[in-house]
Each structure stands twice: as structure tokens, then as C-alpha cells.
Length: 122
Image (cartoon, rainbow, N blue to C red; front, top):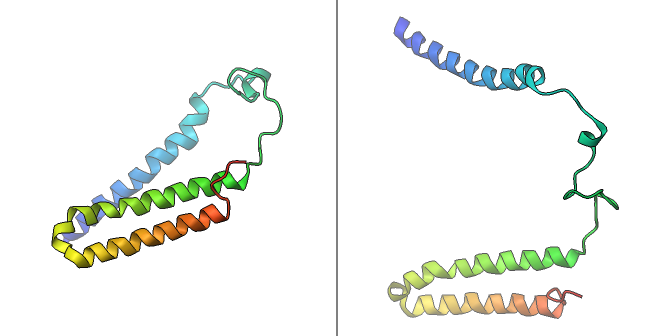
């Protein structure tokens, strides 16, 4: 009976130490050991060695995000063709028709994006 509870005692002890050591070192030892000499230059924003200019938050055109999203979508979709290419001989005509339908759907999506002028940078 004692050895049964003894194993839970060790697990609980390791769990508490696993939580207490990182939290204690970050909350207690961190403020005690770090340097505390803030100056105006140390507290200023660093921007490649130059004085910062303008706003920190700049609005980007939504087309950049759409372009990146389209790239990721088509990249992942093309990645789905690799397992098909590996097992092409086992799939036969059925696999060929499925891959053709898949590629047609990709082309329809690309044509839709092209028609909506998502792929233009201007």
C-alpha cells in the first residue's frame, strides 16, 4: 500500500518542481540579476541604426495577403499530387480521372482569381 502512494508522491513532487523552478527563476531571480540602468537611448526604438520615422503600424494593401494566400493554397494543393504520383500505377484509370478532376478544379480556382484581378500587383 505504501509503495502505491509513494509513486504518486514522486510524480507530484516532480510536477511541482517542474512548475516552481521555471516560474521562480523568471519571477524572482530575473529581476534581481538583470542590469537596471535604463537610459533614454536604451529605451528608444531601434530601427536598423537609424532614427525611426513615421508610424509603426503601416497599412498594407489586401492584395499582398490575397496573393500570399493563393500561393499557399496552390502550393499545398500541388503537394497533394505527390502521393498520387507515387501510387499512380496502382490506381490505374480511376486515379487518372480523379487527378484530372482535381487539376481542373485548381485551374477553375486560378481562373477565378485571375478574373477577380487578385494576381495583379498594381
